[in-house]
Image (cartoon, rainbow, N blue to C red; front, side):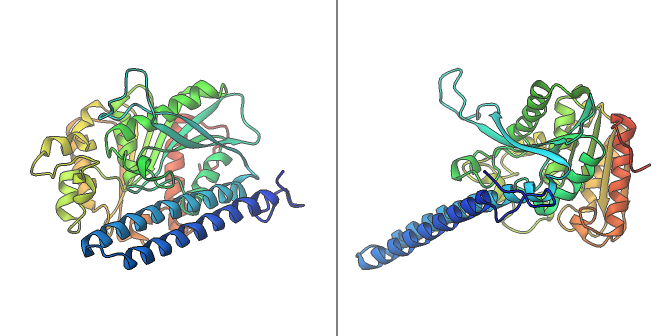
Length: 366
């Protein structure tokens, strides 16, 4: 049983914390020992240099996946440490749609998605729901960047679910390679919405919002377009909106994340329609929910040209949306996810927008 400090907060040095951290250390030591032993054995054998390099690369990759699992374990502890005073926190698992390339017989689905759920410690009889799509290709739901945002949502009375959709890190190589950027990962996040509505009776299915930054913003936009009746408000912070435009301005090698054999397996020049299909700008005509978009002129990760093209497309389609482009905001891509006055003011704008459409029990940002 875990120990709780006198102030009611979870103690990382509790039996649970010590046990998990100790296990992680042992796994890391074993991994490093195996890697060292394998490299020594290879050097002792008479094998081709290419074979040695290939095997070492495979070992490094396996060790990287092991490190990601360890980081996710520590991340679990930090969520409880940082939010248990205001939230009831759990991790749940459910299935997303089968992979497109699956050869399994009908009814077989091995795509298992994990998600964090957060409920206010003093919930209202009916609560609005926020679906939180994490950012970054091969990222995951992290407490260091997102805990303060989740806290602010919980304090307003929202329920929150944050899924680690397929391709997220911390779940091993097989899950990592199941990435489907702008594809089935969108349906994994929709499955998270549905799980929360089906399993938490206090969630009001008529007051559901979806939010995300960067890659998570893309997922929020695509969800709202693919399932226009499912959401009553959408926030997209510095969102990826046009993959073809994006790949043109990103560094050499970025396209390889998409053209990898386990992913799209084709470059933009070979399959432009496939890249357009995965871009929110292609689907703006399907959007029905009110939308707020934020961008930043100094952002080099998602450049403002993508945001501006999305705004033009939304205007042309006659959609109900709001937007704000910040000028050289400090923090660039992360400008409103920091602990600064500007970041807090920007998030207050987000919360006022959400409150107009989702009516949380406590509106603290009027």
